[in-house]
Image 1 (tube, rainbow, N blue to C red):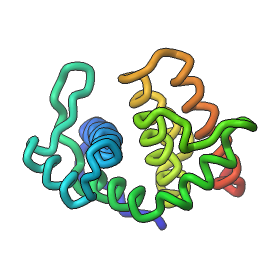
Image 2: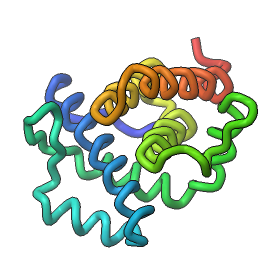
Image 3: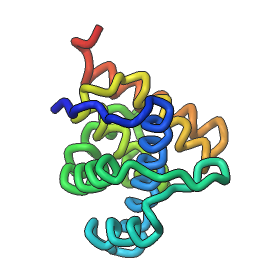
Image 4: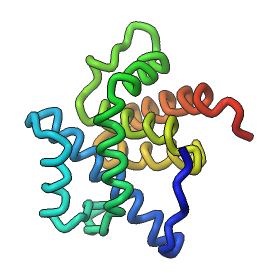
Length: 159
């Protein structure tokens, strides 16, 4: 399911997409902890001015992309969890992962599965960067490994 390219400058578009990814992870975390639904998370995002804190700087997030991630992950959560589970090392389960880590992997898995217009390496790099906002090298390496395995399966025909 390819999406059209954004009209913003490449640097601005990258930053707003990264902010949307971070905001989506935060919203999914909030939804899981609080029991809020996607519409409430979207309203909260808008009430905060549609921004995300990236390295201490409030960056406007791409609202359309944020909304797609939030709704896509919410709608396809069971399928995404199955994909993630298949990419995990034996003995690990999605349900046992920490909530933020699970949200990061769900967003990354969604993009790998549904956004073939975004290169797999970009998806991996973006979510490793998001993970680095919360975790140390061990968890960021874990995110990298799981998304790399997902990319190999979901994008096996990519060049």
